[in-house]
Amino acid sequence: MIAAMDISIRKAERSKLQDLNLDDLPFGHYFSDHMLEADYENGEWKNVEIKPYQPLLLNPSVAALHYGQAIFEGIKAYKDAEGNAFIFRPQDNYKRFNISAERMQMPQVPEELFMEGMRQLIALDKNWIPTRQDHSLYIRPFMFSSDEVIGVRPSDTYKFMIILSPTGPYYSAPMRIYVEEKYVRAAPGGVGYAKAAGNYGAAMYATAQAKKKGYDQVLWMDAFEHKYVQEIGTMNVFFIIGNTAITPDLNEGTILDGVTRQSAIQLLKEMGFKVEERHLSIDDIIEAYKAGLLYEVFGTGTAATISFIKELRYKDFVMKFDVENWKTAPTLKNWLTDIREGRREDKYGWMYQI
Ligand SMILES: *Cc1c(COP(=O)(O)O)cnc(C)c1O
Image (cartoon, rainbow, N blue to C red; front, side, top):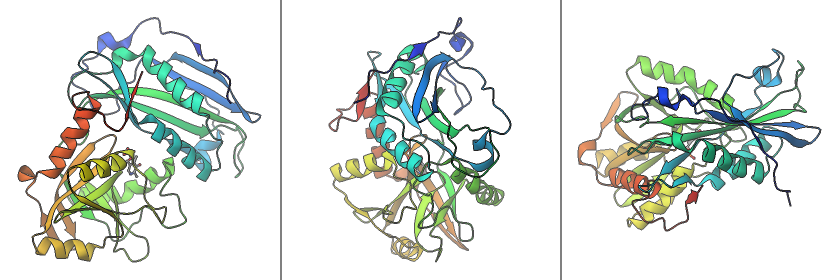
């Protein structure tokens, strides 16, 4: 048992909220008045503090900047019509955070520090949760190695932090996707299943190349044959083929186990779809498209919720989708949004009240 966590709270003198229009927010540009910070030293977490959002003072030798022991999470908080605040499935993110920590040889974060720290921080910055539809408070817990030593080895000290960013809709327009045959995101035995900072830096070059060709994101393929689909950008991917929803399985550790993915699987079953988690090759996708059976393709993730794919390009073969007439992905998106914003019954206990 962890003893009741002692979190010291130092409040900001003035709220920055009055300078902001919460109805018109780009993703991830603004941060709330407070942040949580904790230090790991001598095998224990200490100095747990909620304080005004402010810069960190770091020594240039700090290990995370050189060797990349850095992980993060992405979670969202919402308000219902009565103004009650809820977090969407934070326990699942908590578990995943420690899975990422283990893979990166970083210490486990106790549940009380993660959950109670997040709850108290959000309770303090509750006014930062936007109320408008499709708007939310994005929660970013993260941890990085903080030893001030140049030398490749796991750090002895770490910092765990949580910051909050009010946000509007993320990728709102349907996307054009380039099927990536050269660069890879994750290989079996690698860190694809971890929300490790380096995964994102490593993906940027390929994404920039796709953008030059006029695409929004890439569809990542397996590392050996460049044939089996993995993820779209930083989202899990679903294909509706006939009355089956197919998404890549997690068995090889190359795919991030998305909380939105798990939620989509549940809701698709409720809609009457057969859901398959399995290998899916680009050849099978093209065949289904040619047969007129590939109805919808979409990405799932906390930031974007459900992102519609209007075009998929593999080599010179272009698949186009009539997003305007889709049924499934828009319904899924509405159901999820309605559960999160309190307009639809939360049958699964997904909403964690603050
Ligand atoms: C975060 C993330 C996802 C989506 O996970 P959610 O829990 O649904 O937000 C999918 N793929 C990658 C690579 C990610 O980093």
